[in-house]
Image (tube, rainbow, N blue to C red; front, side, top):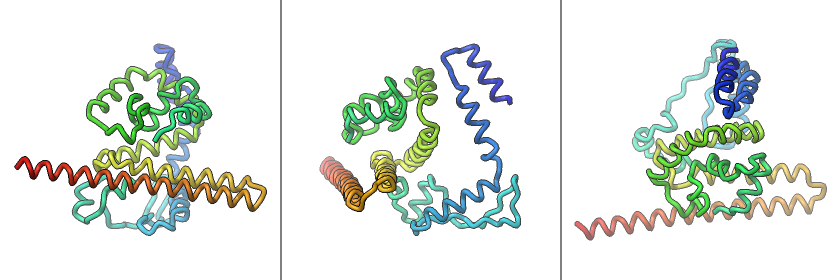
Length: 264
């Protein structure tokens, strides 16, 4: 395999770059990625799992016209999810598209996921924020161009450590990081990073997933009820936090508008 040979050559030249785990993942997943019939079944599974979202449309698969190398789907009118001009033209709220930190908790859960002493780097990778922003609380530290430059610079500097970190965490975590990066890319294009929409929505998904897992392990009805109440409280807190972010953003906009009007 060409990738395996290249990675071995890079590893021989630069021993700090341990990417053999990437080769193993590629060997396992590449055949599945190239099997379009499998992708079609995945699309139908997604349509079933997310059928309760009225805004989501997964195109129907034409199985009689599909093969392992060709996937034929119904044509659906629409725009790209990161097309801001399309959103404006059709009066779609971009924040709805991309919809507090306990530092000891950051360390504890990062270590449990295998990050070890690299937990600060793991927190930065997960949030795409600098360690200073993470440490002070990403909700209180707005994203700046200087911080983006700092992140890009440090990403190149800490590439061996990033490689080591990705090799440590569970493979399922790589898929979550990939999803996180996709959402962040959409937010950047739509210019909605400041609203924290994707983090709030991901948090809701995590709260529901953890509660569902705990309920499946619970042995008594009272314990399941306790888990459900805790889940509802956590989701309520997220909704309140989202409302506060919206309110703060609205107040800031009015304040800036008043200043500009006064200056003119």
